[in-house]
Image (tube, rainbow, N blue to C red; front, side, top):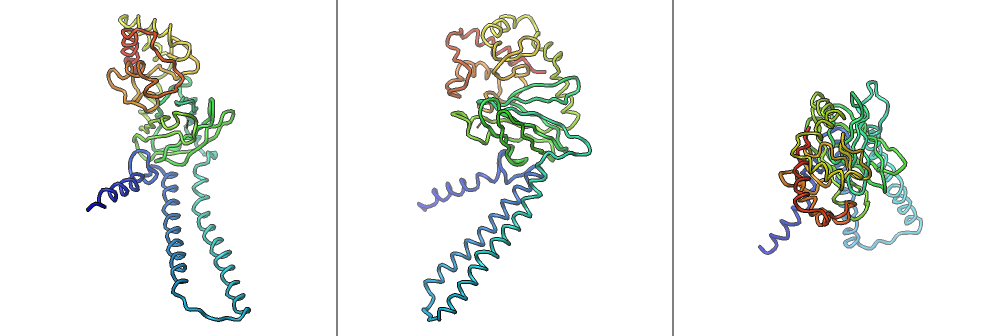
Length: 334
Ligand code: CUA
């Protein structure tokens, strides 16, 4: 009875990786299925090896002493070295390679007949910049959200802005490093429309664990409509919406515009683009859900919620101003 609780805790810990929006064991695309398959094959193979080695080890306790001539000893030793030291490893590694190489091939962004959609993802401490260079009507820039077409291959071109990060959507495929000064490419495909969790997978500083992203795969026409809504003219019109937000716009220009871009108002700098902030599902790179009042809470408490992030504290700005800023930013929904 007293063992029940620790056992249940251990079981939930062990099984925690089997489900959820960041589980490699719940693949939603071919590359991820291959990765999961490699895991199961390696786990099964490792289990067989463990059982065999343990059995041999136990056998040595029970074995009776036998006397052999030195020649017989050498013969037996040679058999073990050739069999267990050369043949077995070569055979098993070759088999694993046969699984691994096609998987690696599928992740490579090799030329396709029909060039796939390209999405650029840039890692920052600690947020994600996402660019759509192929959007009809001009490049679309956003941050901390990634919308991709489902049912077709998408090439992700990734890089880092400051330190090395890694882009990882576990349910779609393997990780890829985001290295400053270099563009790495990975091809991923989502079978069906769904939302997937993504995570920075390379330690990049204090808030590495809080560098999360939601990847939303949508149908092709929905994807194109989403892009069209984020064209600069559309976003500019949004930023210039009704007069009641004029004080908030002024506060933005005074306190935020040198770092943050809002299409039609400011070209920004180091910080994330905010042009369509109201339409995102989370804030602070996955730290809190977007809901009424969330932006204001974030503006007030962001250094408690995500200590060390590069936005300075807003203690010098009046609460009423932060509230009006938050309320206005939440209206930026194309
Ligand atoms: Cu970015 Cu870890």
